[in-house]
Length: 159
Image 1: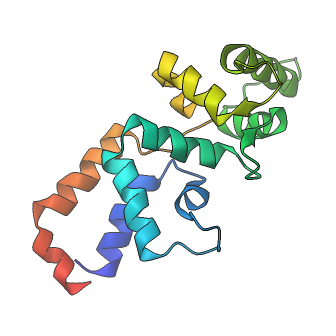
Image 2: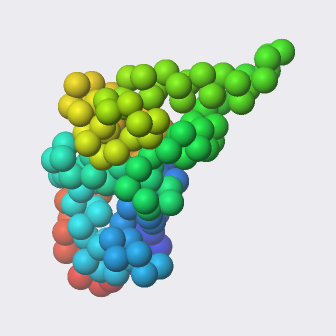
Image 3: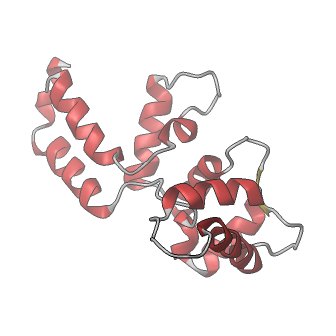
């Protein structure tokens, strides 16, 4: 498989994953090395719920402080939601959504989500895994990627 084909295949897998880099760069050195890339793909394709929760939480924790703050939620939701023409201020709707999310997910009521809060909420309702936007491949992209990669593994010999 040549570089161009591999790049196209990878792009298909991660097209909706805006913050992929932050989740893959485990040592925060600004580079994704081969080990980090393989581990990230492993989580994407075969990861357990626990691994996917850790990955998504790291992606959603924009400043890396170990919490998802109201500001981070607002930023991610604002960038994830489609803007609808209406008379009311769209930021107000997003602020309301942040408050609703906190009521549902903030189990210790400290105004921010720790990993423990997030984990408990996702275990209760798995749809909350990507509550703040897509960061995992959709099932169609996942299947297309695997179908291409496992169709003829010998194609990887010429990379």
